[in-house]
Amino acid sequence: MKPFWTRSSAKDDDATKLSDEAREAAKALDAPEPEPAHDVPSAEVDPEQLRANVIAALRTIFDPEVPVNIYDLGLIYELDLDADGKVDIRMTLTTPGCPVAASFPQTVEQRLYEVPGVHEVRVELVWDPPWTMDRLSEDTKLQLGLL
Image (cartoon, rainbow, N blue to C red; front, side, top):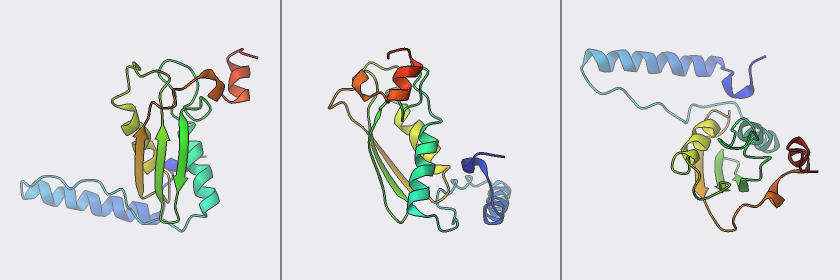
């Protein structure tokens, strides 16, 4: 079974077909290709299920230096969702000198746009309060041999 963020529906297939047709028409006219739409209509998603799906997606993104996902590593300081599919995240990195500091928020944003029902994503990278190992989940501490 495919993860929820890779499943497609008939509506998604129709949207892809239309996008392909628009892309072909743009090529014929020598015009720029249309931008992909993040707002492809999807079935109504229960807010609790949407939150669970967003957290599941965050758990597929791993810190580049520690073999733990960003959610269980405690890098997500705040996660807000509304009924319209808008997601706001305040997150940090393990250190300001992290080699992916400039690109990581975009990585998170792109992954969350793959979640059905998410129509807008805003990721804010913050450094205050600084991340500490106290933010690790108990399971993660166990996994890393810290307990």
